[in-house]
Image 1 (cartoon, helix red, strand yellow):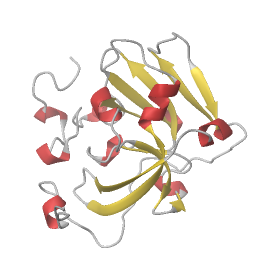
Image 2 (tube, helix red, strand yellow; image 1 turned 180 degrees about the vertical axis):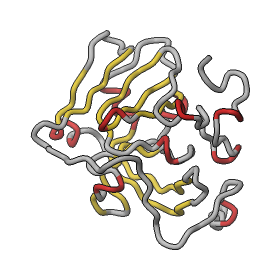
Image 3 (spheres, helix red, strand yellow; image 1 turned 90 degrees about the horizontal axis):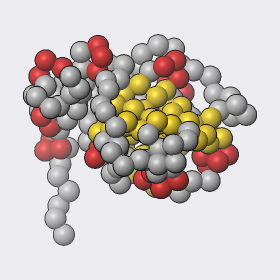
Image 4 (cartoon, helix red, strand yellow; image 1 turned 30 degrees about the horizontal axis):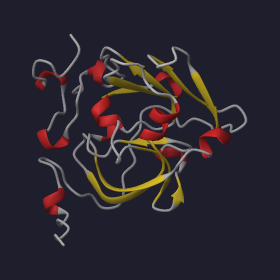
Length: 203
């Protein structure tokens, strides 16, 4: 069997391993009210309708666990994290997108959002996590639900998720609209929008 790469070889360019596990987020931490919480799936769905999942219905979806390194655009990386929750593929199966959907916008509390390509969303490693390292997420780390897209910079791993929007045309999310790279591949150091090559972002 091949050996697992050591942490140094798993670090993308420009990243470092900090002491501890820093927490970075924008704005205040929202409150969770399970009785009224809903996850909305809308946009270009195959049925043309929007769908809502209650907290109990969300809990009935298939679950998976992903072991992944997380890379923040501020240049620290947290290695070997274990995320458990609902794989992105479960939503695609439950509420299929229409033909022509190539991007997904993930929405959070307070209108925060991040866009990802469908090719990045529809991966076994993309998970809507409720647990980190076998314990429920803490509020500052995204409780009750945080999407984890570990092969992209961590601002794409939206905390406090409330909706999934299927897009037939790409659209920039919150940080992308404020100068961050539309794709966010840490191995290519795609940090800022001025680095985008033609075709990597919407016009």
